[in-house]
Image 1 (spheres, rainbow, N blue to C red):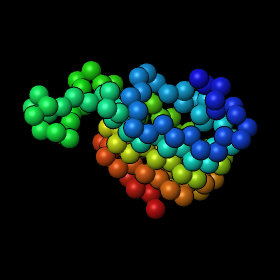
Image 2 (cartoon, rainbow, N blue to C red):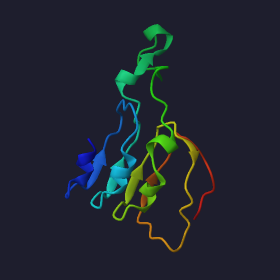
Image 3 (cartoon, rainbow, N blue to C red):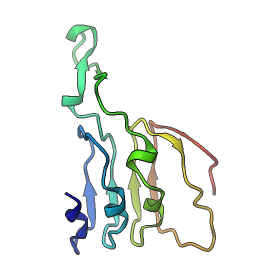
Image 4 (cartoon, rainbow, N blue to C red):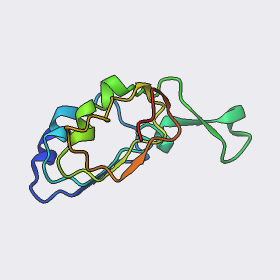
Length: 129
């Protein structure tokens, strides 16, 4: 529920390795002033989202079900995440994200992110250092 992001003392929100269906309440997440760690790795990689390869003949090898949700950056993660006032850790690895990252090189805005994880996605854009 969106109200979870209104909790005053919520510092870490981790929902990795889940089978999330539907969009995350991005605006509610972005409005949080207490979250310092947002861990959204593998939003659709839980075992309930996988099926065995070769009809289960190869133990431990899986593929995502064809009906697993396709997570897109524009649907799931709003650019405002990059400017949350207390956010220092943002992990979005393993979501198959597509799209272009927002330009966060604006020197007039303050960015607090110290740890950014974006591996195993299909993102494009420039790396601003």
